[in-house]
Length: 368
Figure 1 (cartoon, rainbow, N blue to C red):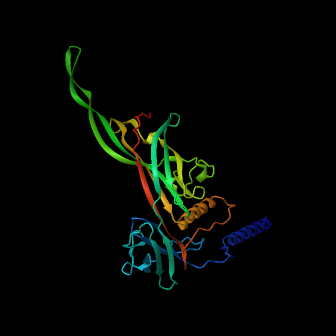
Figure 2: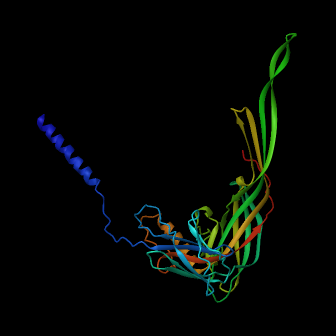
Figure 3: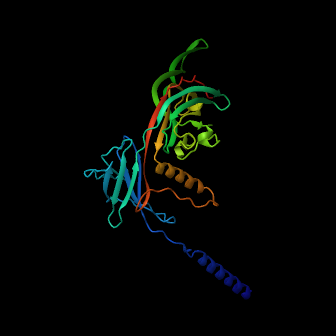
């Protein structure tokens, strides 16, 4: 018996020692990259120039990114130094805002001086706005099985010749909705009841009706497909790069139609449930029936087409590729595109044109 106790004690001691070994931190034997200054600015016409300065972080480091709040800047536009425009740091947006508002064709150079670091610089040219010579949208079929309303959209893009151009197209929609809510509330009131030849004091149920109306504006993002083989390489799905715009934006270049007017067809699908619906429920606590009717008054569909600088186009595609690679353990490492000297990041520009379509209202339906 004593030998068994000794053997059991030795086994427990061995397991405890093994657990201690498991808790020993595992060192990283690779090279730890040096921290770099990061400059980020996606420039858009008709908006004040903004720049965020921060620092890179080792991929195993989980601490928050460090923001640089003490940078000073040198800004040149079309070769002219804007000496009075130094940028002002905004604590809420964590970036510097400048008085300068970029315009199409502007050549912008910027240098950031950071205490204790080498200067960080970048340059870009703001592209001209895309030339859309025609754009139309019309209602298509209604899919009763999935309660989806389809729309067809066709645009004609006039592409400048003898230069590389890069584009992005986004779709979204808004609806002004009239909401009518009817509340039918039950209550009891005293009543005189004639029964068996005599009058009795009793009660009866009455119903009070209250009707309220208001209007609301809702944002919607349609599912969009494009079957243009010149810009989608034979695929029918839109290239999605931003989570909240999943399935409704497209990036492409003019490699196959440089200098030509090119027609691009799109098919948009909107979920009918978000367009019009009615419902009713009973509030047992408040003893009332609530009926709500949503009727669309104005449906608007928007299309924004952007001209991207080459650096911004490559940056967006590389970021999308990096995000996609994170979903597989067998993926090769992906590097994002950077055009910053003395650091990493992006300083690049875009310009845009927006078209608004107001299709016919869809007949109200009831969703039980």
